[in-house]
Length: 262
Image 1 (spheres, rainbow, N blue to C red):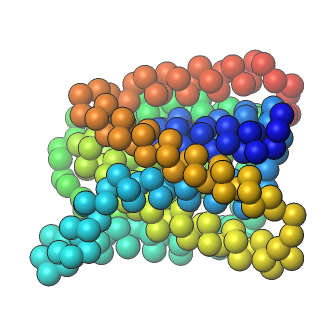
Image 2: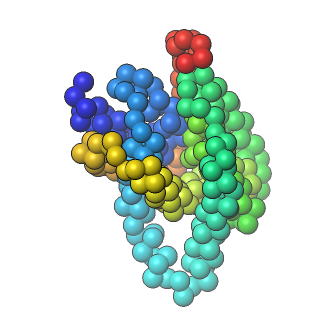
Image 3: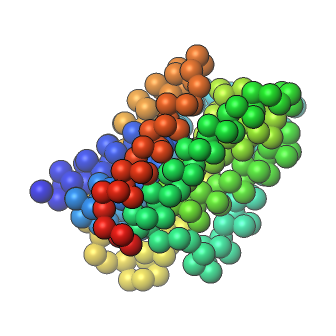
């Protein structure tokens, strides 16, 4: 397959799956099995394209926060987003430098998909029984840590890990939990992309197909925008059950359909 077409397909897959709680890593792993493996820089930068989509979807909310810092509620919300990111950075940077991450191979990703699906089913039911406590500092810290866990265990899904830990910690309303976790993802993924670019330059800065990366980035941005807009409308009246069942089915199919140890 033409390399630019393959990059376009990978960008479309990333944009669709990054914010749905089904693991973009798992889907990219499957796609790259057929379309060819890509560099860490490619995979992380196209995630930044999806994060750009979040900025576009939440542009009014972001502008209201930026120009409304004179209001206590806005200041506290921005502070909590920054604090969750700080927790992720404080724990995640040492973890990354030490290389504490499971390999992005089929078997561990498949198990993460299955276990994550089961976790989602249980967590949503448990969250429904908990009292609404709002965006507490407990939620903030746990969301920051959940992002690290998602990075260490490919296939977990950053959105699934953060949204459900937030709901269990007391931010029980799906739209509120989703908004906070998505907004925390903005500095997190942009920082991860910047870190990957610095690593790329430190290693010599050669070998990357910039045209393919640009196409994939644009595709991820467009499809990410559409996927997020759809998800925000869907969760107003629907549970996450369908995503959990899909994860379990996909993980099982991977375990059954590909060679052991792949």
